[in-house]
Length: 124
Picture 1 (tube, rainbow, N blue to C red):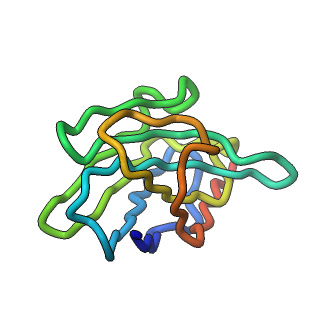
Picture 2: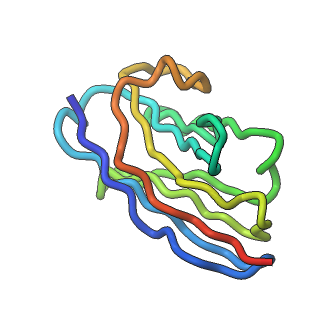
């Protein structure tokens, strides 16, 4: 199995940027896909972005396309979410998730491993 630890959340003004990190440990030698999800207060968890470890294919939610970039660092077994032009509606707890697969996965139900989440708050 794989363990995930997120970091990098915080408070930022609208229009600002943040970079979230997700460090993976454990069985990281198997091919897997990493995804970012977010959960706003009173709402369900929704897909933000995903990247395949092998090949680096990416997928984004329409709401973040052109503003967020997901990337991976093989040397550090980490995945990052660079968030630019942040909006108040981006305020949420952001979660990193993993699934052993070579395919892009966007469904919350298909991810098996989850981090504890990191809070992102965007003030207007």
